[in-house]
Length: 380
Ligand SMILES: *Cc1c(COP(=O)(O)O)cnc(C)c1O
Image (cartoon, rainbow, N blue to C red):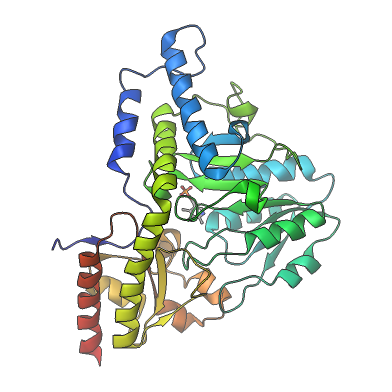
């Protein structure tokens, strides 16, 4: 058994070898700029981008023209929130989001508040879920956007996006969802869920880093955005700059693989997580944070009794896991997600996120359980 085992798939995942293989030719022989219309080098690049767009559209159940390639979920989130605010501010300046969103959403909302936006941060219950009645009552004539995540990156908890979309549309507002954790792991279909703006990132589902997309609904309703980056007018004028063809090819391939293998993989990962959680809860009094059933298959957020996450992390250097999000572990603050769910600071500090994915094995789970229990038993 190798000493280092990776349990931080929610922070990032290794690229699938098939993804990397698909990308390779687009660095060298097939290096053309897809905007070059006068020669075959450009046409080859454009064809590759077209294929990737089709692969992604197929997975999301949307039209190819509704996808904007970006550098990742953070950029997609910025484009969606700021782009909507720029266009719709004359209609109203109210945005609704939740307290448990990713920093990319919360940080962008803070920036918009500086520009005159009024932002409501909805609370969540102990399970990590928002209250739909409270959402209903929070929407007013000034509400231009409701931004609620598909799946939480610390707990895996899934918001009821379909019900949210209905409520938001009844009031003629726009529904945006950060689906960076959900895409590629569980079915995310914009036709079924009626999400109007959806953000995703390739490296969360075994694609390359620095490649993401924003889905923008074209009809019922047609969502308008102001670009953040101006220039050559690529991506429907919403994201200028020469397209990162190898990364886009990798993103498309990652989507194709994820869609084809999703049902088998989510079942396998979910069984592995069950094995991990059973072993730890039975043998060391560990409790689960967040809804047990309404969550992604690969994330487990566990509340330990004997020690803090920081202690576990430092005493088990061979196990790669985190106390919360990668962004929060840099700041050392207790998780804003767990405190919003009602955990006190002490409980939040004793919570650990383990996230599993495509290359996690049963042997790795058993080895991790062995090491964690050995440490736990020393404390008892
Ligand atoms: C990872 C993540 C992001 C940011 O994605 P980047 O690719 O780092 O820009 C945003 N939201 C959620 C829920 C995430 O998990």
